Image (cartoon, rainbow, N blue to C red; front, side, top):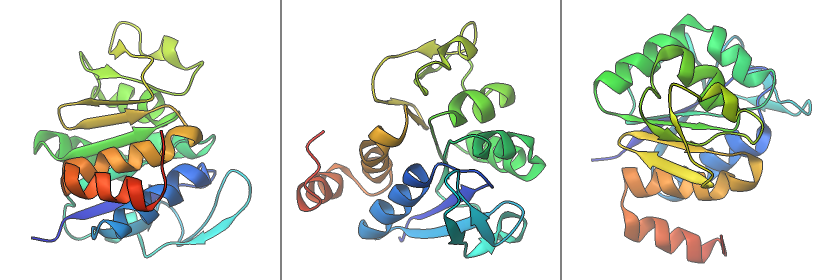
Length: 184
């Protein structure tokens, strides 16, 4: 069965984190929907315009994975969204994959209680936001059950491959790693 994922882009998202996930997951054969939070044309933190497939509010089916890029104010805008919170809570209750990178683990997932008692990582400098809630790891990418967290733009490809591993399998992730010449 074809696996599905939604990458949610909010104004001010970190472009490497969002686009790398779309690219890698599509290479793995995952049906990826790019969902804009407030508009179908979304500007990244460096003012790169990206045309999304749909608005998040128009997402009909629950995907197998949701990807939350960081960036400021992108992660803050995701955290303010009722739709994002509802989708993430629903997916967590169903044991589906929730992947957050950079500021998104602390800004989006911590307030929703998703990381409570979980091992996680985040953008360096945001670790204090995990204290008393999650178990901070200095690893570049961390998997704890259905939750995948990562540190930032420099870990975006590793993060994306970890999502592929969970959705499609280790063999596909390793093949992509080799074909894309990823050495991390």
